[in-house]
Length: 548
Ligand code: AMP
Image 1 (tube, helix red, strand yellow):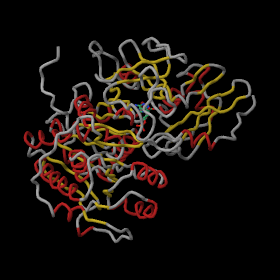
Image 2 (image 1 turned 90 degrees about the horizontal axis):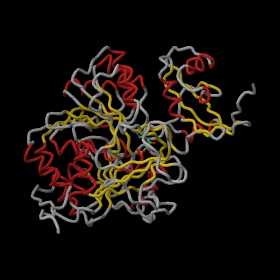
Image 3 (image 1 turned 30 degrees about the vertical axis):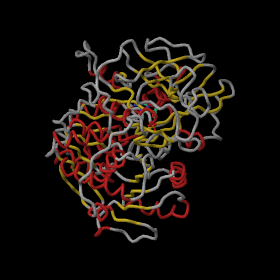
Image 4 (image 1 turned 45 degrees about the vertical axis):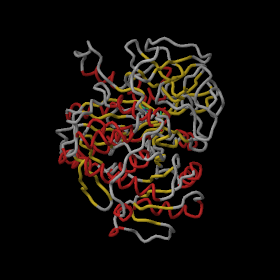
């Protein structure tokens, strides 16, 4: 027997229609290269997106064609998210911070037909122009007055383009499993791989992303996604935030600028925000330096990399802002887990509360998790056993664009058991709290035991005089590998190797203590703000531990 319910297709355009009807006067505030504070309403947003849909259809592109965007978090990028997917084309967000040869590879691999490019990214696109094989037109995201001089052919001004079209447009309904968006992984090895999101996966992810125990975003929230729209859908906030009618505050190219972030939070009344730990460090540093506050900011979600204890404590103690850690991946749209306090945990001590927040949280409904040993046997959720983390669910990739979709194949992320191997190593405790202990390839394998590099880094980063720390495995004649800790000291700090080891002694097993500590001015990061351990291992490839 079948259920007797309508088979309405889950379409991204339906979010826009709903928002325009129900929240017409809600504001979207953006920082752009041509306007430090652009503001308009959801009604304006919906109208301009229909104009964009007409413009796209006039440009000779077809259903399923990939349209590239190289842009920051602002209203024009938001129009592209909805306009491109809504017309049945694929919104291919491209990270302009990747190496130019990676950007070149990604555009050619996806065969993007049109590129929508922020003014500030034009020099990058100009440098690639002779290599871009599929691109027919380039639209610059600005108005006539701010159009840059360019050596590129077939360049169109976005505002001029929109002005040519009216807003009479009916959003089409088609198969909800059609591709809607695309994002290439920014892995440190091999070529980037294309993850393809569908309308259905995006809508289900948006529902999950706004649940009370996820972000609790609603029409009363003022949400500022600092996580970029050029990487994994800005964690889905451009969909979830619009779905529930939040006021959106978009920091544009000023994502890492503490002064702009603080001013947006204070002046626009931002209540929720999300970003990677490096962004929070930049904001906290600015607040500490200036004495300014973020009184409306009730919660921030930190993800993309392990959140250092200092960020959780400083936000809580100095600014009364709750830090919720989340974990996910490009292949997971990206939402996997988010921190929430379980019932019965209301009376935790400050220390217990912080310890729990250092874990990556609990899975949101829609994501199933398991941890397995090297023979793929499932391990218990006891908070001790750690193994390879596998996931499955309706917003998790079955394969990469143009690569094998057959589970078990080397270039398919899904194993023969139908679960996707995340490449992370984790424990899960009896309450369901996930703790990422490492990337599979970063685990330090010492004398047959696994040592978590993240545990060492977290312990080191809790020292007030340590700004950042990274642990890598280096060759050891007796134990095969031992941990080497690379430390960046805070300003004016003076610590010796022995001081650091002494500090760590109280915080970890003797076996996991770094074999040696070296100091560096800075650590290498990837374009998405993660520690680049591959580069670090390369820097220390000839390093030898001192003989004792
Ligand atoms: P990406 O696909 O570039 O977003 O990277 C996903 C990877 O980032 C995950 O597989 C994890 O290794 C790492 N990651 C994401 N969030 C966290 C977190 N909260 N703590 C530790 N690692 C994280």
